[in-house]
Length: 358
Image (cartoon, rainbow, N blue to C red):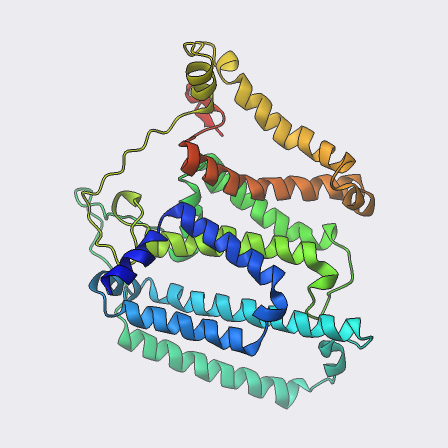
């Protein structure tokens, strides 16, 4: 059992955890015909139940998953896996029907029902079930209330509510103005812009993958890999001093990891060119500034001419550039995470004179 626990703790390494999540998404999309089978769906749910049941017998893991704050995250994992499998199963079924010349399942189920009594009865039952669940929940689990705030006793680790853990994890890789303001704003604006950017009528009102393969894959990457996985990572794998710990590993507050975070300007001027950092911030950070401008301004134009020409012609200039800028903003998170993990690169542009970092 100890060997199995050490093997599982091995995947608490952020690089392996992120790689595993990405590989899992690729396999789901690539082998969706296999993944959508009932055997795989209920098998995954059974595996999760077995994993968390096994974890309850470990003192360290039990302290994490039994904490009232973390119980919703355990439920979130089950719901995330179930609805990912369910939506992919329905999409595969509809794709088979469409390829056979039939209409999607949802089109054959367009029989209307009355608000009264059909819908009202359904809502009443749902309300009663939710009320019972909340009452049982409040009786069984203690309210996650802590001691009054004390300046001399700061919680370690100090974690945000679960729905903000993704943003808190982003603070490791970006400056607060980016992780706390710019990127969340782009997420909200991007979700609002989807109906105006993507006017393709296919897939509206029914599940499909083949008709919207790129859109579905990008959305799953953003929601599953870049959002849900960061919440899971911050809940179960982040411990004291915001260090990484395995799920079966003891949270030792004295654990120290030697990290030497380096700015891009230090890599170029000191390590590659063997020179001292220039005193002028513009000269010192010019490589990072040029790289940022190229990423934001030059790359979309280059992709429009080669690589994404079909999307440029389909969407038009305005919708294309908005879409690509939103996509590149989303892609900046895994790029920044990988550069931090692989090269200890902290900032692409670092101008402490003006409290500006990218």
